[in-house]
Length: 184
Image (tube, one colour):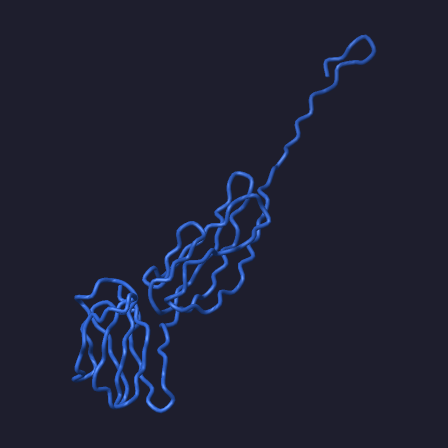
């Protein structure tokens, strides 16, 4: 203050002002188990700042993340992480990681003669397990028979099928079992 007719000039004083970044905290709930055939879904996490939460997957063979949408790719596990790196006003939030378990599509079974198809989804082939399997048919979603197999062993070659959802009809003597199979 330079002073005036009533006041003398004030001595200059220097003070330091330290501005620190604000902390932020992410809340990200546990993920429920999924089946590989489940639809893509939105991830939800909250944060106590105006900044956006980022999501990532450590196993993109099982699950991919685009923005906040998670897409299931194959059976297995993936760690899904919610993070926020901070900015000029906020410190980075501690990341929160949740385990995602993706199960195979389960087969329909008859009580006396269980039939299993695995892996499901399948790429080049799948295995079929069950007793007394004589014939199986692969039918597309329109009901068109794609192929008939006389089972010899337990490997079924599906390389020539286009990606999509199919139904496997298994004949075990008089019993018939139908299962859904995804070809990718």
